[in-house]
Amino acid sequence: MAKEYSKEHFWRLYKKLPQELKDALFAEETGDNIYDVCQRNKILENLDGVVKLVREVLMGLLPPDEFQKALEKEVELKKETAKEIVREINRFVFYPVKSSLAALYRIGISPLASTEMTSPTRVTPPKKEKLPAPGKEAKEDVYRESVE
Image 1 (cartoon, rainbow, N blue to C red):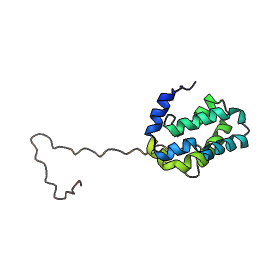
Image 2 (tube, rainbow, N blue to C red):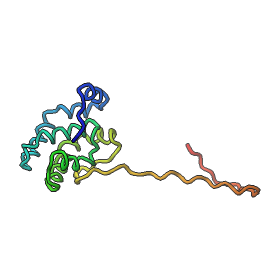
Image 3 (tube, helix red, strand yellow):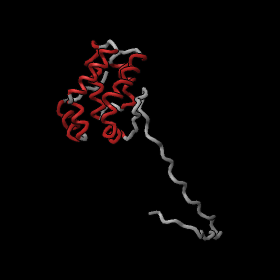
Image 4 (cartoon, one colour):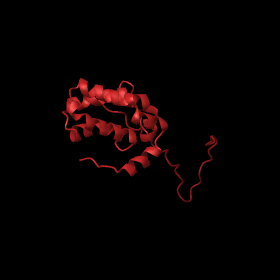
């Protein structure tokens, strides 16, 4: 079962959100889009659960790439239905606020909303410069670029 958050905790998190996400949380369009997605997929009886999970994603409590698993587990949707819900919610709810969500989660979001959002790109750290063995002289490197 998902963790329940107090009103105080909710409002503390809300105050830290970018304005775009604050607006999306209470936008009539967001609610309409979620309702339409649930209606198209014939899961109106699960509307409250879907709304709760979308809110958690917009609040920074549920990473978007875990949204489908949460729908399957907490809302008890079949995998195919959850996949379709995620695709549509990504397109209609998350994509319009993609820059704010990306900043919040440090991820990239595909406009065509595949079933999952892309995860952060891993950057490999630069290799450390090898030091010469004790007693051996290092060759002078004639080509050096500034780091700045």
